[in-house]
Every structure is written in C-alpha cells, then in structure tokens.
Image 1 (cartoon, rainbow, N blue to C red):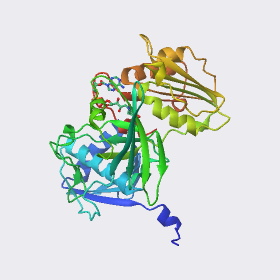
Image 2: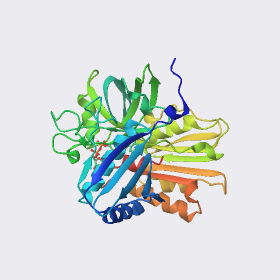
Image 3: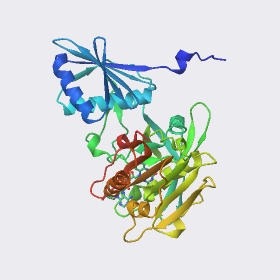
Image 4: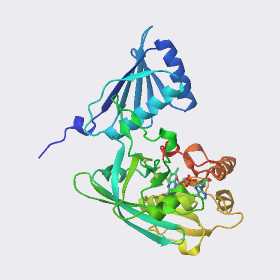
Length: 361
Ligand SMILES: Cc1cc2nc3c(=O)[nH]c(=O)nc-3n(C[C@H](O)[C@H](O)[C@H](O)COP(=O)(O)OP(=O)(O)OC[C@H]3O[C@@H](n4cnc5c(N)ncnc54)[C@H](O)[C@@H]3O)c2cc1C
C-alpha cells in the first residue's frame, strides 16, 4: 500500500515562462491587471508574488527579461492558470515563451472527455444529462461547476501546444460556446472515474437547448474545470438562498450541504409549477417555489423577507442586471461583504458569462 506523506498530499505543480521584456515594464503591466482584478500582491525576495484563486504567479527578472513561475495544487488548476496567464499576456501584447511540457495526453489537463449515459426531460423546462468519464472525480466534492464545450462542426477537441497552452481548433476560443453548468449530483467510481448529472434549463434561443435536441446516449462530450468551490454556507445559522431557473442546481447542492440545524429560507424561481423538484433541505430552512411572472426578480423576493440583524448569509444567483440590483439592495440594507454573495449566472444582453466570476463560490 502506498503511504502518502504530507508532502505528496500537498503536491504542487509548476509551469515556467520567459518574457523578452525588462522586469520593470512587465511588473507594471502585471500589477495594474492584478489590482484591477482585486488580486493580492506580495513582495518576495527577488520578485513579486501574485496570489490567484487556485494558485500563485511569481514574477522575477532583470533589465532584459522577466521570468514567470506558476504554481497550482493540481495539473487541472495549473492548466487553467497557464491558459489564463497566456490569454492575459496576449491582451497585454507581450510575447511569452513557455517551458516545454512533457504531457501524458495531448488534451489540456483541465479537459475531460465523457460519454452521455442518459438524458431525460425531467420536467417541462429541464433536461437532466448524465455523463460518465474515467477522470470526472475532480468535478465532484469540493467543486460545483464546469464548462460544457460546444465547438464548430468537425473541429475536434482542444489540444495543447509544446508549452502546454490550450489551442482551440476551428477558429480559436471565441468560436467555441463554453457555458457554465453545475454538477447536480455525482457517483464516484474507481480510479478517479465518476458519473455526473447536470440539469439544463431549456429556453428560447439557447444553444445548449438546441444541442440537447440532437444529443443521444453514447455521444462523446467534453467539459473543462472544475471551478467554484462553493461558499461555506454553514458559517452562519441563518441562510437565505435565492436563485432563478439556472440556479436551481446550485441551490440544491447548497441545501444538501447545510448543517441539519440550519435556519432560513430558499426561494427558487421556476416558469412552471411542474418544474419544482423534491430537494433535500434542513427542516429549519423553508423551500419555496416562485412562479415566474411579470415582476419576478431576486430584489422583489428579498424585499418580502425579513432579514435577521446578525448571524446571516444571503446568496443570490440569477440574470446579471437583476443580480446587480439585488447587490445594491443588500448593501443599502446594511449587509457586509462577508454576509452576502451575489453571482451573475447569465446575461440578457450577452451570451457568455463566466466561470471566473463564479470561481470564488
Ligand atoms: C456558475 C454558473 C453555474 C450555472 N449552472 C447552470 C445549470 O446548472 N443549469 C443551467 O441551465 N444553467 C446554468 N448556468 C447558466 C448558463 O450557463 C447560461 O444560461 C448560459 O447562457 C446557457 O447557455 P445557452 O446555450 O443556453 O444560451 P446562449 O446560447 O448562451 O444564449 C442565447 C440567448 O439566450 C439568453 N439566455 C441565456 N440564458 C438564459 C436563461 N437562463 N433564460 C433566458 N434566456 C437566457 C441569452 O441572453 C442569449 O440571448 C450557470 C451559470 C453559471 C455562471
């Protein structure tokens, strides 16, 4: 039997890159980005350390060149960081040379290929898709979300270049639709395998809605992640979870995680009474279904809830502008930053929303 030492359990993965730019210029650009993204920057001997959500970036250099060292706790997290830094450098018009990587697969380490095991229209507005994969275990405990990859016809799946950066066939990353979904439930298999279920809210004009129409058992799909660790909702006694149709899966996962003695209220917006699901929840947290009508939005729902003065936590996930309004409402009603988390799950004015935005969950 293999004995895990503390060191192997906390294994770190690294990736190095070189910029043909003086340190003083590179660090100015990196710092200005880091500050705008609210990232923590620390001075270190011989350089600067930027703390990223799932790892860190060490920047060092001299008058001619700058070196980058990325550190993350898993190959998948390292892949996500490397791709994010590569994209950022491209936007800053700074050429990067990544150290060659020896990879066991030509696919990015955060990409998993899975097979559709079943799909079922579970209610008028939702289709549940169940997928199996040999390495899906990282999408289970401790993470909530993933991106579904829908690429141009016949493009194949993304691969990595010699430096380990993801390349997007069929016209680059912008040619891909990469919406975020929530793992609704999972079963762990052997050796990192797992079966995941996710619920797709069906809506007019949705590319995923269209995609589900032709989907069949046995189809190969690809997902990336995982992302979103899930805000620890058990820090307070009282919880208020408000979400629209797209947030039903995350609210289901959060309710399952609450301690049995938790108190509060969960309010989920659905278009049809038959979309209500039988969600597991503590007795002290009432579960309510709100039928979508003309003025149904999180702020209206919030205004009907009496918030306790302390020991409280409010979670809101819905359409971007509605979430912004709810955030303002909560601020006006005196909730501190650590008492509320509000997430944009989709946007009525744009098709893409971010896993990045959800990565603090
Ligand atoms: C962290 C996170 C977790 C999520 N989890 C889930 C989940 O488990 N299940 C789920 O169904 N969704 C979930 N979503 C929302 C989902 O990613 C978006 O709704 C996404 O836009 C769906 O892509 P699409 O192909 O359906 O629509 P797109 O092709 O991206 O958009 C087409 C049109 O539909 C509109 N649109 C997009 N979403 C909606 C909507 N919900 N209602 C009405 N119009 C819409 C867009 O504005 C656009 O005009 C999650 C989002 C985030 C950020």
